[in-house]
Length: 127
Image 1 (cartoon, rainbow, N blue to C red):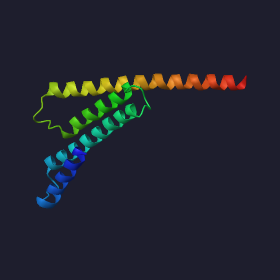
Image 2: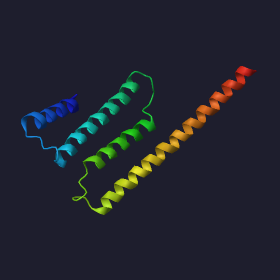
Image 3: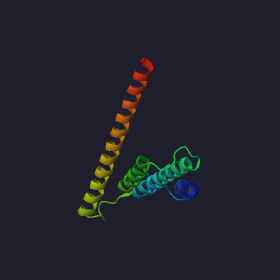
Image 4: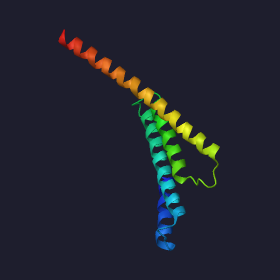
């Protein structure tokens, strides 16, 4: 709620109270950064509510990886490459690739398990 309130206040301030310059890159970075923060907070809230409602007994690794990927995506959106050095950019890119690869591997494993269980169900139904 706090992130949504701050996003609404900032958009109102920029669009109504200040002279909005559509060519100002910093304004777009700020607004998109706030929108991504709101998305990250909503995903985090959703994962906690799932645990509390006992739909899932633990927070799944895939959810944590997706939240981390969202956070890194936000960092790339609001990034000012002029102020950040090449080693930092490379580290962020490498961490994004690593998280994406781990997510892909986990998803592949889950897909294989789902396929095996559906094949077992089909075999048991045919017998």
